[in-house]
Image (cartoon, rainbow, N blue to C red; front, side, top):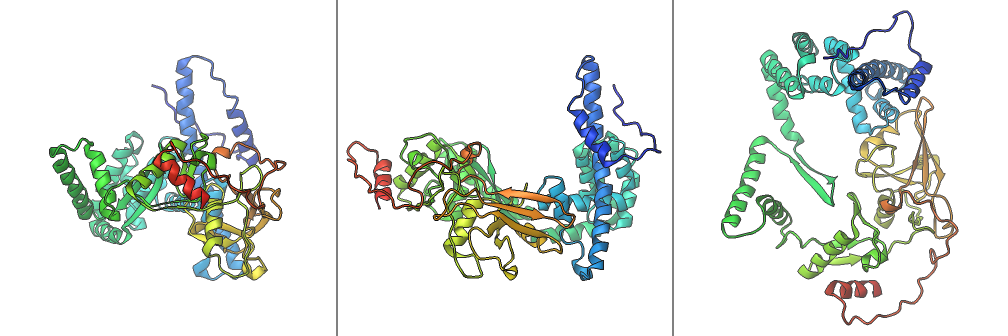
Length: 475
């Protein structure tokens, strides 16, 4: 077995930013020769390198946090507000979401200030960043002193433990040292109960309930019992299918799980709608949906009698971007809010895929920024609050196409952090399948112009879905 522990460099030579850039560049030219034994050793060393890099990131993150707080104190920021925006800057530097930036900052502080043995193992490449995260997570209810006790007691065994082993051992020691604090944490967690949703592969979604254990077990048992009864009565669906359908029916009150009301916001090409093209549709907040699945969804809705709405949205030439709206009120609401949310799809901060919660002025209203589609951007709560910290600045690099200027570039916002780092955000294509397609600014079309008269079609021989869609489009 190879020892993949990193050997310390000459302590007299400090690693500079230029050295790091050179290292990143050289790793792309790693020599894979020398046989499989050497390749395995290289894989192990690179894994150790990731751990050492994570430890270095932790130390730098803590130093950055201290420096930023000192700078904010000099600027007169109240003590309770110091540190705002630090996690978001760390997230952007790591090409991550602000929510994960907060976790990165919390992990760094715990490792540097409270868990020196774990940090030492991480620096030596003997544990991964994820296992260090597990250590901090399972000891989160303890005081700083008690955390150091767990850290010291696990120091000898930590490199030999897997993910589950780290979690189990750290949790057991936490219970032993301060069971009362752990119990308080468990009780406090009940106040965080919630339901969340996230996209899943293959046109599916994950609906998750974060519930107290008794409630979660009771809900699952009820669904499982109903599935058992239905299977005994001859229902040919699988147990999992019955449980999923029953959950939808009981939560929504629908007669069947498929009778979902649908609003078609034409984040779906007309050709796809009428089965004349293969381009995927899109469900806001979920992502791409295969054309056949989208049409099947509509068919099931019309067959079950569920209501279906159609709303036309106009795109710029090349059909990559939606055309904007203007208004004079302070708040983004109504159709303008809906428009910006549809255009941006998720939080506009780079690398943040969180759902949009706020429609924000890129250039602040108090600084003269208008309430318009061009100056609007969809943000999650964390990103909106982060950019309100001192020395953050956002400006509109391009307002995006409008009905008056449909050839303008896609909507772009430039974000500058207190350190002067600059990040650009461009509104995604209205359909993800067009992301690799450059905007066709020379194409002719009816964007911003009245629709040509629609010719009526003979509906003889069409399916019920096609007849229904023809009526919707003719409305």
